[in-house]
Length: 175
Image 1 (spheres, rainbow, N blue to C red):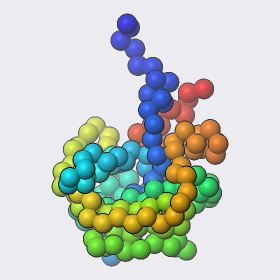
Image 2 (tube, helix red, strand yellow; image 1 turned 120 degrees about the horizontal axis):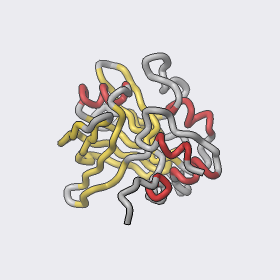
Image 3 (spheres, rainbow, N blue to C red; image 1 turned 120 degrees about the vertical axis):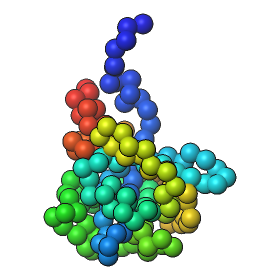
Image 4 (cartoon, rainbow, N blue to C red; image 1 turned 180 degrees about the vertical axis):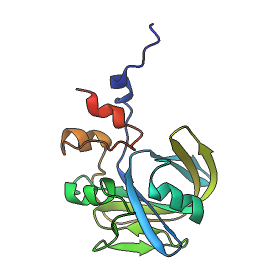
């Protein structure tokens, strides 16, 4: 087998679509992410991987905690755009958004979410362009019965594109 990187093969990996959020120094911020997964069951730990250039990354590094909101299939593109295509350096992403503040203070988005969780960072791994956060889940809440949005749905149904700072940015060119 050739040692080639076939991006289409990587697109076969399944991903969900989430809002990863935090609070630091009195400011709330969050972003769309597809790199979130549960990694252990006892204790319950999750991981997320975010671009170093993103404000959310900086804020999680300061606060030491984050929330994850699992988005539903019916979420409108305008809502995804608010968290995915705009910077918290320029706007208040939580304006007109319903959320709960959890144990850690992290904002857990309830609009268009199936469920939410919050985690305390227990490990980080610096990568070239991204930071991998491992968090111990301290609380979670089921919000409603709905189909979670997958990354494939985002591209195939919603015709969405990945921003430059997404781990999967190169997938925009896959036909």
